[in-house]
Image (tube, rainbow, N blue to C red; front, top):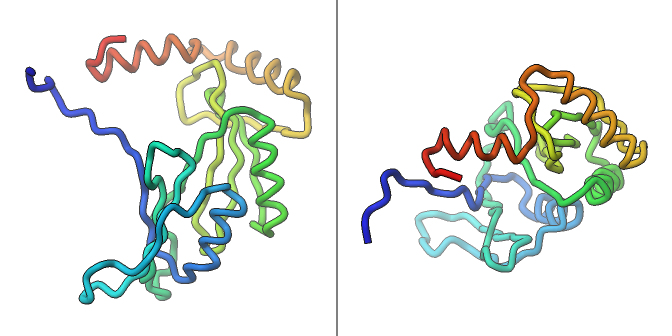
Amino acid sequence: AMAPAKPSPRLTHFAMFVEDLQKMQDFYTGVMGLTVTDQGPFPDPDVPVDMVFMSNDPAEHHQFVLVTGRSDDVPFALNQQLSFVVEDLDELRCVRDAAKGADAGEIWQRSHGNAWSVYFHDPEQNLIEVYVHTPWHVPQPHRDSLDLDASNDEIYRETEAICRSDPGFMTAAERETEMAGMMGTGN
């Protein structure tokens, strides 16, 4: 087989240092619906950390790993945000409501044209985004208000109208073809 013209690794998981392993595990299983797939101490006594592996995909052993050892003297979260995709607006509302029930603090609802998102913080102040793809694309960054208490039809109509008024508008399928060209992968 010929070697690929360029590598194309796919991001599959993320590991994060935490202060309170149990509190964070409870949040990510309870609010985000992740399943613990494995857990235990790192197998090197010189690296005294505990690890919890989690996934929502049976084909991926882990998509997310919590690792003890975050220093409590770091004055800010080292990652800008962690983002999770869901299937539809109803599932997005479900996550928003779970975050409310877990006292996640303020919850922001936004439309980015190409996605509908909710944002909130986990117990260690990492910013979480949960989003749904829309069928449209507008150049990013882009932000409009989003009212998840409106009907799905209202949300679709309002978002589509805003997107179509943007000079950079295209459908999500057209943008995917354009991005495949940018990445040299064809379509």
